[in-house]
Image (cartoon, rainbow, N blue to C red):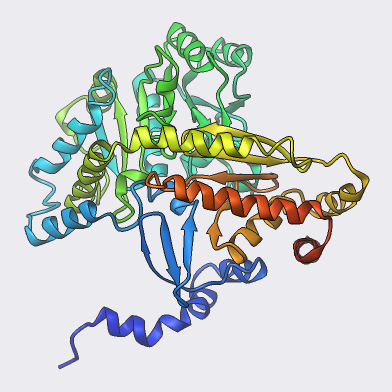
Length: 461
């Protein structure tokens, strides 16, 4: 008889092989990339907005797992909910019953969007988007969905068809016959709608790539145009939703905007169980599920599973009881304003923008001749290397994890857990100031690292 399965013993025995295992069996470019930029660390545990490496060093998380860790890592309320649901030994996923947890979570989500009526639960943000695309086509009887340039809505085939970044699309065609329009350009939207074949416009109220906010009045104007042409507005709130921008949904910053479909995911998981949700109007769901023989016309094998539903209910409870939406607004404004105050101090710092705890820091061409040579060297090798040159010392010297906001973008995106506080803001601003001071000296370790990045960029061309 074999020995009992012991996860702790397995990790103790094989955990040190993590990078070798990834190189052999998973995406081999990931460990290569991490080693190149000095991110090949070993993290042992995490809590809230912090995690600790193998040497016991504390790291500040300003990335939140690409937004997944909205309520922080290992929140005790979410942990308890998952223990409780496992201990309950529920008859889950029988496929032929109506368990209470999905209905309860749908009810709680819809309370934040009273103009919507029903929810479909899937397993990820891209699946929530796929659902919205299918539902829009079915409800309107039209084939084409509009999306905004530079948008990111996921990487499955339907979601990829409305992805505004060509780098993600290359090699995966042909895709669906959808069309890009510039974010904020109502005239371009009107021209496409005039063709009469548009089912919907899908839009991020604040684009994750580059952290670009829809201009004031755009969402409301787009909604009016879409309604006039009997097309739908889909709000992709996968990253911006659940308090990230200082309101429960980012589209709520603009009065009168009521999307026909809303996509959420990421933070709803509590960082534990993948989950996605598509909220919509009753008449749209009535079109999709038009008769009993279409009851399973759109479904997901693991959708509405008890663990994901319990995590989602716990997350919504935490957001409300700990006032995290309001916290995102106040702490986010503190962080943004303190960073914005540095723009006049550093010529390499171009702009600080965003809402709540979704902030973009953009760098630009310096004025002085001393700095311009280094900037030009990096730009000639590959755009985006300066931003990476800032991200690297933030981690290596100051133990703060951030990310470049997109390929070939000179923008760092900050999307920390909503539980960050004023002490974390101080830590980040102090570290960022030190890194920018070093960059503006025009030499030293930071620019040495930049030359390493240039060599790597040239090597992979």
